[in-house]
Length: 350
Image (tube, rainbow, N blue to C red; front, top):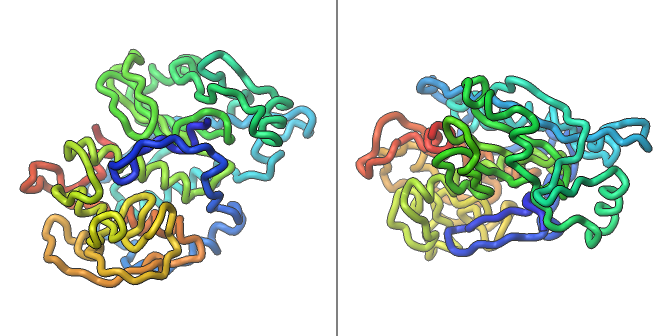
């Protein structure tokens, strides 16, 4: 099994670990065609009012991209004709800045290209040859797949930089079968955000570790953050069942298929009109209150019909992720339910 393949509770109903081979490769055209794929018909504008005290997130990037001697020392992502991790990072940062109305401002404090394969939790390390064999024949891939996160944090000097405030978050880029969680948390008080919880790591405060694959695209990077958001908001509201619309979070995430015909903005896997996982290009029209969530907390009950053309194509996955995040509440103040009106704060400022 591989942790890129997602450990999650979609809709708060089940917990599953899917093999990576079952994950659809939805970003198939690569970075070169990103601008074409990102044409869309967003229902809302990317232009937002002046953000409330933008939150800058300083990031250390560890790009595990070993040089392959048999291929003239080209990095792994080039050898396999995968995406350029630097371009992925740049585009992802811009997407989140836009979708948050300018509230989230990523800053890469340092980028380290790591000429090594990560160490697994049992000490195993791929070589260029054994990784190539794994990629050719998945049955030969190492098990357990997971990387040794505490060792990684120590090896690359992450903890002192978190303690000093130099960085707020760690991003790890790698290939399939490198054993990285989509999102994890380390430190005292760390909690589940759709990945490992390393609360025994000695650090002054908890911090997030995002795992990104350069074999995938920006849509999948946003998808990782979406599951992190779902897990965080489930915690903030004390639970989440997608068919029980008893909290503002559950009402926001409602989709017609799982929520007894009631649709709002949807979940990471189920758009408001979706009829199955990853159903981002479904043309079915449903009545949704998504437009009303742009006014949160001042909801009026307004609804509009939505379909896949609400967020648009041709990359429906990427455009749905942007549309979903642009509806995530970001108003100032505290709601009558005692929670912040700006839910981005819970995801990034904990």
